[in-house]
Length: 70
Image (cartoon, rainbow, N blue to C red; front, side):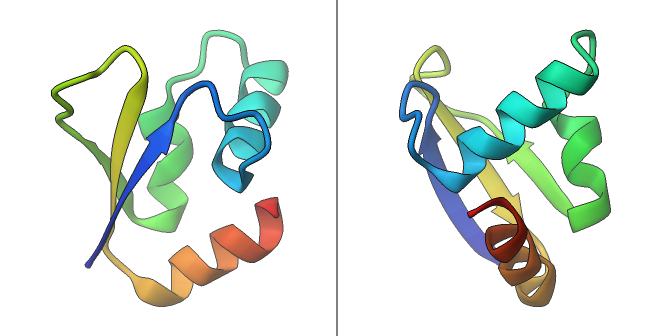
């Protein structure tokens, strides 16, 4: 399992490219639903307003995610 913490306001990261694309195509969408094909889940965060913790359960799908959204 890979655990990553993403900053919601870092506009140059691959994760924010993913979020921006999903919000543009489905404004009412939920990040958890968009991460489901990659077998990733959103975990609890102490600073939930600026940080987002994601648990990646499959390393190969994580690498495919990074390659696609970089």
